[in-house]
Length: 425
Image (cartoon, rainbow, N blue to C red; front, side, top):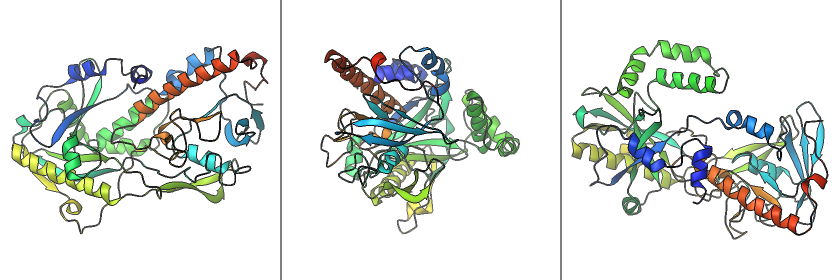
């Protein structure tokens, strides 16, 4: 995509990701290339907290007004266009905003909820003439299907874990099925990584991460006492993790857990709908019916079984499959949640197959657009942030072109348009 380089900059990853990935490879080499698996690298931002990082830029921009603590509660349709937005605060104040172009960028659940709740003029909600709003909801289910006990630790593919290179850039090594093997095995996309002590590392390391991320946002962790207790009870695990990050190699016999993140196939019955219950602003509460198909179960089992064979072939150690992987008759466990909300306003040029067109514009509504991973037709097996930022930049470029054309066609300039408040009245 043309906007990926700019999205890398917005996320503070840098414009030359390939070079940085190559520079970041640790000693130990890549996963062998002659099997069904191919190595992949995930690169993380510092992390970039967008509200903190870009707050000053928004506050000083001459062409931007930001209204905080004002929630959208309704949209007025007039001749196939959004003519008015109704907003409300939690303390009961209400006001209206008019705009030439409108973008919903509220997340994969909230985008669908707002469209469905705007049913005063359209019985089934705005943009929902074909009944697609809220459907095809998906995420990235996370499982731990296998444990591995290392044999010859010196042959462990070093990049199959989190590490930080000399530049302070954070990476994570992953394994994926080769595209031809994915087709041959009849699976969806899936990525896997190994972690000492279970998903995302020992419990003490997980607690340290939560404290660090909260501190970066200037906030307190949700359960500081619990996190401190986890750290105090896992000093050995923390020490092992820090030593490994510093270049220490795990000892023979060390145990690792495989964590996988799997792509979901689009399912119209996996969906967001509305409950009769209403929230503090008077909007219907969202109901989520998140479904997992047999194909996703097959993908997880196939990936783990094939990888166990590969670990044995390479002499890396001994793999132990979980019972629900080794035996198809065993019930599938409840999956972990990656908090990626995808597909509820999916993109398709055909109004009968998608909520938005290829410009992210809602079909049948001339000036309403949607940004975010809710427009993804399918979610892949990687984190969606970079692609949704790139799509947002692409949408901004498209809207700038439309606004220029409107002004060239004689529409009122923005400073002549009906004013809207710069702060909540």
